[in-house]
Length: 334
Ligand code: TXA
Ligand code: MG
Image (cartoon, rainbow, N blue to C red; front, side, top):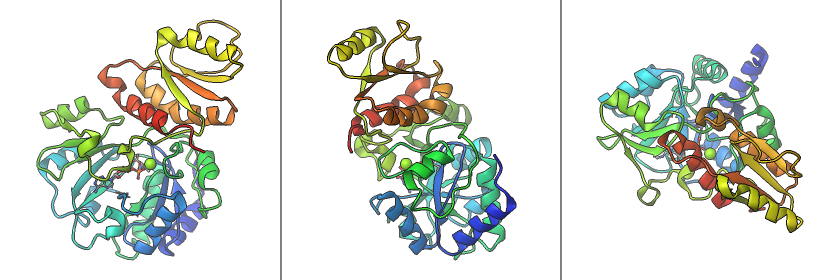
């Protein structure tokens, strides 16, 4: 799925005019605007229905661009950039004075990422080459392209469903390879702190940094919207059920006359179950890739409850377990 040159031209024209463009990244689809243009950034918050004090990630096309947004780049940030960019990693760094409050939520730091998706990179390069927006710095601010609190989109069709009437252009780059949002590492406090788990796990960070990063607990977290207890949520109520109890649970639902949707990573315990059953890969990478689309499908299937088989407790499952917990907490809101 490669957008035509005319699509990129239109996207750049819209960004330069202070309008929104949705585009694919390797994690999830983003809802983009010129990061240096507060009026354009305000349209992101309006389209999503997101509280205005939640900071956004600024996407840039390469390491060189980072200097223009931040005070200085600590050595630990350099090492992470060199290893993981372009890729699913966001770094929080002390911002330069000019960076608008609209994008940082009034904080003295800014989140930056060079995404790994070729369409995102092509868009960022073309935007930079066109003059780079009002500041000339070529950053595109983009949260996930969903309504606030809902499931992040991992395909262009999901963006259309979430925001179709609110975004003038959606660049289609096919399904997202990673499927959950980037790992966020705060590099502004002297030692690295993981604010949001993701595909790049603490063990990967440790291998590069030589020390284990701290993991931020929700209580002390700065304004990281993904850290709200309820997030990434379907409209259908959701329950996490252990593998051992899953069969009994769905049988009990059936006796009550309820149709339950089931998301498991093990084989269905018996053939011909009358429920909507979705089996996801039994490895965390494959599971992350399919999770949001599966939740979205369940929302469409008209089931009264989504039962999700609990995940293994090992560290490699931490990022998807985090998303599932928040989805359960936020599920069932109309
Ligand atoms: O994978 C991703 O990160 C996707 C794609 C589109 O790049 N974006 C994404 O954006 O997930 P969003 O807005 O849904 O989540 C970005 C997170 C938010 O939780 C936000 O609060 C946090 O990044 N963030 C941004 N700037 C920050 C800052 N200066 N300090 C602390 N957290 C920050
Ligand atoms: Mg989001």
